[in-house]
Structures are given as C-alpha cells and as structure tokens.
Length: 413
Image 1 (cartoon, helix red, strand yellow):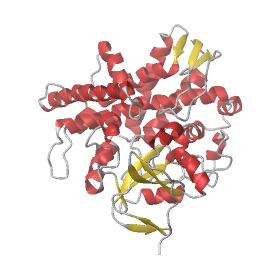
Image 2 (tube, one colour; image 1 turned 60 degrees about the vertical axis):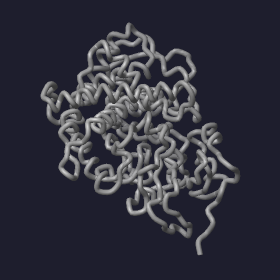
Image 3 (tube, helix red, strand yellow; image 1 turned 180 degrees about the horizontal axis):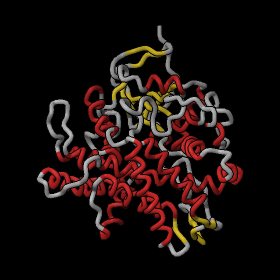
Image 4 (tube, one colour; image 1 turned 180 degrees about the vertical axis):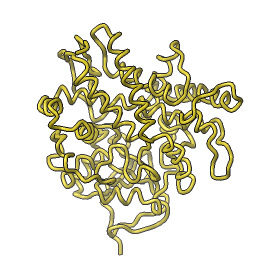
C-alpha cells in the first residue's frame, strides 16, 4: 500500500506561487514537514519535490521526461520551442553533445578573455559611473556573440541585448511585459534563422568551434541537418543564458560589497575565488524550480507517482536546505573548501550529469564568467557603492536588487 502525498487544499494555488516566488515550495516543505507535497498550479495537479534524494529521483531519466513539462508561456519566451530542454532519451543525449562540444577548457577560456576585454572597454567608457546590471548585459552580449560566431553590428547591440534580457525576464510576467517577451523571441529567432540560412549557402562563414557554425551543420540521429528554426532556438540557447549570467554578475559584486570579511579573505588569498563563486550561486536566488513529467507509474519512498503528472523540483530550497547545508542562510564561501561535489545537493542550475543529463550545459561558462567578474572588480578596478536600495524580492523572477547596483568613482587601480 502507498502513503498519501501531503496535499495543499484548494482549487488552485497559482496566485500563491506568484505571490511567494522562490519561497513557495520551501514554505510548504516546512509546513508539511515533508520533502514532497501535492498542489494545483494553472489548474493542474502538481507534485513538488525538494532535497538531495528527491533531486536524484527527479533526474532519473527512466522515471521522468521533459516533453510537455514547461508551460507554453515559457516556451514562447524563455526556452523556445523544440529546444534541447524539451527533449528526452537518445534525442536529448545527441543534441546535448552538440552543446558540450563547445564547452572544452580552451574555448571557455576564449570566452573569458572576450568578457575581460569587454569589461575594460565598458568601464573605461563609463565616465566613472554605471548601473552594473545593464552594463553586464551588454558586456556579456558582445562577448558571447563574438564567441558564438554571431555577427553583431554596433547599431543593433542595444536591441539584441534587450531581446535576450526580455527572454529570461518575461517568462513568468503578466500582461504587456510577457507580450514584449514573446515579440522578442519572434524577432531574435528571425535574426538568427537568417544567419543560419546564410551559413548554409556559404554567404556567412563563421569559424569552426563556434555555436553558429557547429549548430548550423549539426545532424540529428537520422543524419539530417536540423531545421533552421530549431538551429535558431539552439543558438539563442547559447546567447540568452550567457546574458542571463548578468544576474549572477550582479550578485557577485553585491556579495563583495555586503560581506566585507569574505571580500578581505578573498583579497588576501585565504579564500579561493571558485569557493566565493559557488557560494554566490548557492546563496542568492536564480531559478526557483525546474519541471518534468512522470514517464510511467512508479512508487518512491512509499508514494505513488502517476504517469503524466507534472513535478517541480525545488532548486532554491534545496540549496538552502538545513539538512544539507550548515547555517544555510549565512554567506560563507569557505563551506566549499572541503566540499565533496554532489550533483544533487548543489543545484543552482539544475542537477544530475552535466554531459548527458539535464543539468545546464553552460555551468562551467557561468563559473568562469563569475570568476572573471571577481578579478575585474576586486583586483583591476576600484569603485564606490553609493547609498541605494540594494534589497531584492523573492517574488520577482528573476530576483534583482532594486537599484540594479549603481557604482560610482570607477577607475583602474
């Protein structure tokens, strides 16, 4: 006999999810004293999971699939349709290899050098003051387009950067902002699709080992070139997540400001920059949850999971789970000094295997960009943080400091 899953009473809790944001699932895990519970979101029965054991279950490809898991509003903005995030099994593995072919150390180093160059150009031209979040997006957009082999004219930098921003800012938005996000998706895909067609007719010749080249000539399991529409989605799945690292860039510099003891240990070499970066990724909000569907009926820990049921994994709550982390609400980079890496306890960008599973393919890119951010703002530039509203909401998706972090008196050391 199976045990009943703790259930939140009521017809639908979508508004509660929007009101509570990142804390919706953690709050109920605490109130139910359970790492899983049942609710209803957008009119659909949904099971929410959290914790390391639940994460290991969630990334079991024999039990869960990604097809039809993401709401249409996210496919129309954040992910795009028929991209790698929506695939399962052999199709997903084959497509994921296409992404991972770009993620070798030398290529990541090339991107990091581009980011370094663009930071220097942007900060030197800032006339001593900048809004960090906005500047970081343009820095990352310029860098990743060059890295990916995507031509980006100076006259279109702002438009294309704004489009990438809208893709990850509008997924859960309501009203006009969501409509703008859908329009940005349409415009961006048309922009990249035209380039794909030019590559395939030899009118555009990007370098090999760039996303535009590799994806344009990638063949599926049947040996066929991917449709240009899908290639456009996947190239944007390189551009958009890299620009979204601006959120982590923002929180990295915020942490340098808010935690002066940790900054000092970093400056004196007592804390490794990778530990600092990992703690930023653990501590601050990025993605609240990720979604999948039950592949076929099964039982786990005495609970029944029915085929087709929508399941959400609590990313933020797992990274703050007191059963997994000592004093999780304290910012402490040194916790990563002796940390034994686990694919299921530390899941800011998803869990499981990065090479073959659904963990973010760009995780190492994210870490490299954040480490470069530390080098820029700790060792190469001095600046002041004037009084401003640095609070951030757990309701907003993505969560950002209200002021987007204004820096003044910026100058090279």
